[in-house]
Image 1 (cartoon, helix red, strand yellow):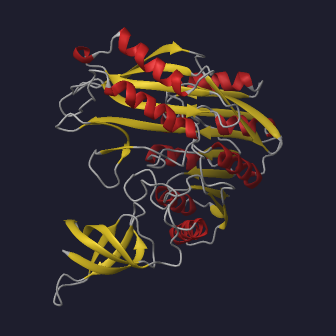
Image 2: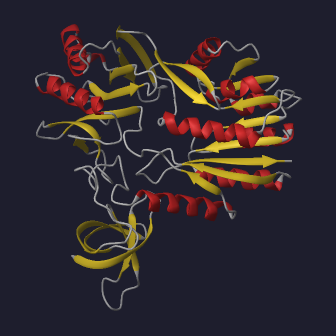
Length: 453
């Protein structure tokens, strides 16, 4: 059934929303349409109703929005990697600013745009998949699908070598008897292909993640085939190559094992922030900001807003590989980083040494549990939690320790706004909001909130 509707806003996933009536007597209902822009008048084919909203497939743009542009990628509107290639970049930024202002009830500083909104990602994870007929797919998820994978032929979020490597690995797999892993049956071998690069160093990494089911283990011949595929895509280079075994057994904790196959055992990246150059070691499991050039702007903004002094003590909570703490360390008396992930702690220790810092230490453990054991807080706390935000224990003890300034960085301003509201109730003032467009052509952004006593 086809309808014409006007796109008036965006869903939580960044897809266009329009209202329609199935009959003259029916109430108005929203439909979510992939590939649309606010202001579009679209002809759509109605799909299934989920909760209070229908899904709909775009058939035709009857009247384009003033913000509509021609997408650069042929997969736009199908691939789940981008949601807004069809939306002018200036309009993307405006929506993100408005989103932050609405969530916090306060006008943010102008969003920091990307100088180049293309080829910005330093990491991509591609999924192996097969259908019932055995057809093989390696790429990104199809937008709004349940596990269906698109065979990517191009991508403009990464450097060109990512697609070269993807195509070579896909060609290797086409001649291989290995099966894609199927989670519900715990059958098959190949899970994901992950590619990474240092934007400033040019160093590269590739790792193949396979099932831990011993019936489907990969043999030496197949591993050599994988290595040759990557090296064919990168002639004359020496990438870090790894095999990662992902073991998931029902009722037991998920475990990971890594095997170094070739090249350096770590990848290096550099960030230049406020005139200083910092070096970071990245292992396969390390989290590192996916858009390093925008991360430099993010961290420079964090430094400017926090305005650290040589007498300050600083806590870097959910510190990961200690990136933020390392950047602040030259400006303060002492930094203590807290992180639960032991692999991140190991990388963080390497990064502290690489940057020749003597005033920073790391503590392994749950943030809330460690804060509970402390009697004295810092003068500045940096908080960069998961998308779910601060857990109740961490929030409770952060308030108890009462740092003079809290610099809260988040890729999910919804949970960030909830936590900020709790901090304001505890006596903090929200003195600045600064968004950074870390993820052009998507609905996502990175946001800094500065709170002060």
